[in-house]
Image (cartoon, rainbow, N blue to C red):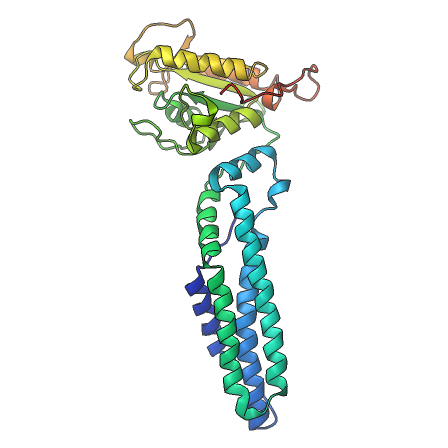
Length: 339
């Protein structure tokens, strides 16, 4: 989703600027003119390198307020939008300051006696370097933000979207791998899934998205961590249908009663979103709870499951809103509060 360039930290950016400056060349009618032109070229090369690099970082990051709601909330969860704005503002200031200093010293060098040129050039570098060092922490923040945002999947808002939810380790990732192109990491311990992973599958001529989300625990929203909040954001903004997985075998490490309470909470919070419940890990046994049974590991029941999901996902829009041409029905204004 976010195609962000590599971001240099402050020492690396200064090395880049000084390295390019050292390679600058200039021409002139005589030795004095060549010396003056070279001094200007070295300062301009260093300054322009700093300015263009920093401005490039600012332009590469998305305009946060213009992002779709899901991505806007995901950015807030992953990197804190206010902090990211602060970093981008500081880096933008530094780019402008580098441009200002470059112009100032190019003018001064152009007018100064030849014998003063080495000192002015050194002074220019001495003024540019602190500007970059002043935003060193902000560049570090952008490096961290880039790492986090590059993991955000690219989603198509026009496709029917099935969001897979449930407790950690109930088999969500294994199911997404089994029924779609998605390849989330699968491991036998809770909270393996650290973010949202997207897969695709087709039924007839219709293409669908299916999202593997981090595991949820049955607890209030204010106690949820950043991993869980990504799952809530996917449910709130993207789901045209929800697949909720139960693990009656309890090999996930959580009692079935706790899983059922979370199911009740999801149903209450998103009443207008079609929901299908799968009792996963049927190959491991466990008490029947009256829902469709199947196994992501063996494939039992998955063909029937996907047929049901495809039908439900094409009947409603995200958050329970009717899909184009469907009946009008309000979506809940309080989605996500109960969770």
